[in-house]
Image (cartoon, rainbow over all chains, first blue to last red; front, side):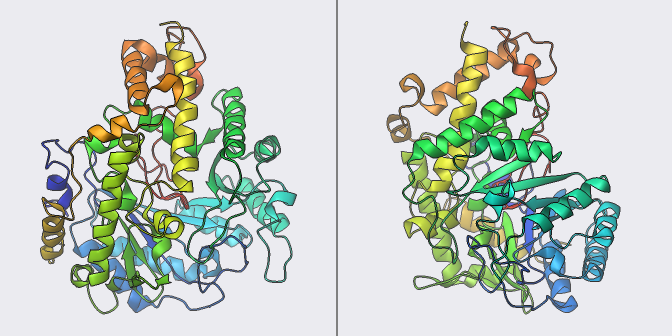
Length: 398
Length: 109
């Protein structure tokens, strides 16, 4: 854990030294259960009606393997996701967190995180989240009319009221949380309504996921929508954020700023900085112990070209199964080729590092491809908006 | 903890110098094909100018104020993001302030 990370060499075949960031595996996305208590129509997850749960034995094998390799350095985030995490009992997490702490090296910093629809939050969850310093984000798309257009129960009813009840309970307990809002066709003309709604609810940290074709969600309400409408939405959100004097933080713009003002270009500092193109930069594990890497959305998906994207099972073996997996080697080869095409064709490459493999596959039909809607909306557009703003503030009189 | 160094060693072998490795060679084509954006400058050129301006004092304005940027404009609003804004994994289902100055790549968190 303290030596021989692939990063130490992979960072520097061209002579660049690796600097501050030594972690190779930084993010483990673990699926305690595929089950979700609601049925959003844009969800990418297959099998979310199934109520299976990861067994203690499987979890022990997963955790043990993560710490047995030397891919983890000083810090790791465990995200409990790929289903509604709060649909699993608190007692399951109490055992899981205890196990992880016991298995982890004492000096390792661990962050646990939930991304939840908020509907199951109660007093007991608030106490648990607070006492374990768990990072929590809620998925709320804005005011009820926008949120309920897509985020519905299996009976087709809206979920906004219950989600907001959960959000308010978190606030009452003094728990800081962020919100991720999906931008769908319904959102585009309502940037002000969405912004005002969040701020009015005391929510000052939020991010936007633009509805994508991913997993089993093969179309988007934004298909065919002119790019300038999406751009107008984000530009308005940026104007509103700036007008708050920094009180509101928005993930896409903060990320863009960090990339622009960094000492070096992302890919010059570390060619594999982009977690989604770094093999085993993200480890995704389903409830059965099957594992994948690159974009977490790939886990559980079966395709004609590759079969499943599970590269092995941590219940029965180690991560090294991937290295014998023809599928893994093909995905790595194709992903690498796609990143090289990004390098050759995209002016934003140095600030991005090669996009999101899952989006390339699901949208373009191949990992060996370049621009996607994710690139345009989540990478390029925020970078352009922040560059415009910084130029106006910094360069206008120089 | 390092009972299985073979995985890392093998992964390293895959990523170093072989066909499966990303290269660090700059691409001339990337510059040629950079999209026309602000006044036909590439994102790289625009970013370089911003970084140069920050070295001239803009970063202080952005990080802590008082405003000392060349045009005296409102850079202070970024101060809460300074050194902190990239602390998100870039998979978007999680938004974690995991490390000042770093950024993540998956957007679903």
